[in-house]
Length: 478
Image 1 (cartoon, helix red, strand yellow):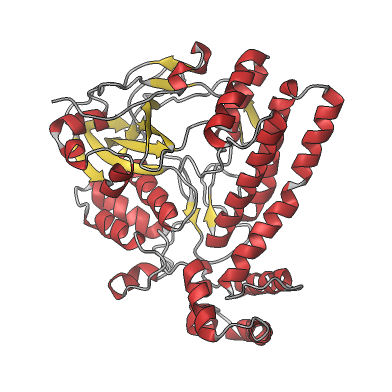
Image 2: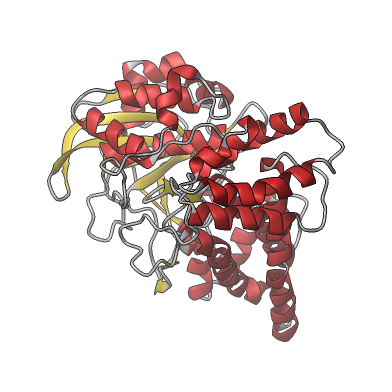
């Protein structure tokens, strides 16, 4: 019996140069590893059907459900600052779109589903490690209230993929509000295909920013969405690791979890990605890099903005507005992590002073902010005197709030997670899964479903890594 998914594929109705029509490649022995039943319900898809042999066949790419219109999207991009005129979905295929229970359009995409015209010599496959990493981290981000792609399912293929060695193959079913990137606009701008660029702009406005009407308003909307997103990343110690323009989503959601990581010991210039040798995408560089990426979007939109001199001036003004928007989102985020709601002069300096002391004292990023609510944050510092020198200033600021300590604790706990998917736990989970044991994966998923709760059962997951456990490099996983 065929799987029932109510597809309505608007992207497939765009002109042919937007994509390549190609179906996923069947696999040998698909087996369901994980299914996000709550997300399936939000999408209006029967979870029992997804668990059936017919459903697993679809989730693995071995069968195409009725109504699907598989395609690989075309896009370009700057990767570590270097221009690539053609990238595109090299190991992913968009099955189609559904409208969720709230009426929002959602893409359903398979990652690791085989070669496409954009594979550039790759095999188009994924191995189990990166699939489970993205599953865990994207769902953790959703639970942390960060705009993100989602994971619907993970399936093993029964086939090995060759990287440095043979590794178990897998397919991730990813859900997103779209897969439109800054690089999608760059693709058509570089080809001087103004007609396609206009079609993409109209489509994006309708799908993501229905209250905006012009290319300039699109640019302004994306700037605001990205300012909000990056501020949220900074508030939880998240490092994307590969902020190329093809990984910058036009709707302001987190996309493409490759060498990403959550910081353990705080250091503002922290880098985990094994391919980021120069620290281009370090933690503290993320606000600067997103402006660079947004400038590439602005450049792509200029042909649609009328008189060139006027367009350049308007786009420049819009880009210059990023900083104030980002700082407003950033201080709101961090003010709350200190139990503060009322904006007051000096709040930014108070936050910066704490973080400078955290860096000096090698304090754990997540645990320090969380411990503020329990009065034990000084325990996170190698030299507790560093914290003591800040604590009295914070206490004086709290007295100016007009709220009591219980209210302030509640605010801290609502904005400072007790749990993050720590790098060493992810690596341990992957190692166990490759050996056939999914218990650590399932436990990590259960814990991350409630990241703001200090649950005794998961107290070990709060612990930072020991020296032997520390993960100093993360990998792209392609």
